[in-house]
Length: 112
Image (cartoon, rainbow, N blue to C red; front, top):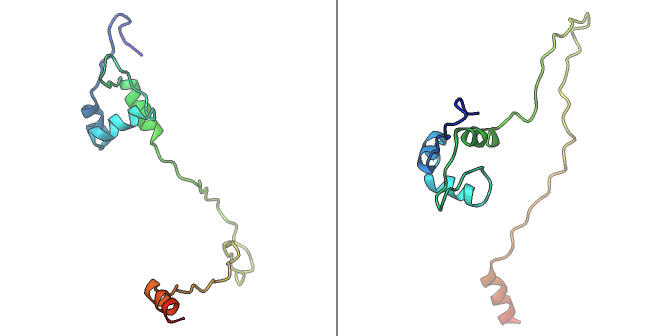
């Protein structure tokens, strides 16, 4: 949002955005070219407003996959039972076998 409705927004160059994001200028231009990040293109150059830079940061924000909420556990009278975490069933191990080198296969074909 503009503080002064008549004022134009400040436009940042790809080098400024790259420095703020810790990326290269090439990366910023490539992401804009592919349409992965918002940009403004007055003429032939990529430019970015402060709102667009904030949106780029939000686009590449990483969130935890699982939110763990710890709840207080009641102390049970039977302390011999321990709580175990639920683990997915283990898959049987598959024994891998190496393929014979190509030269061995060629020698066997020539011998036959």
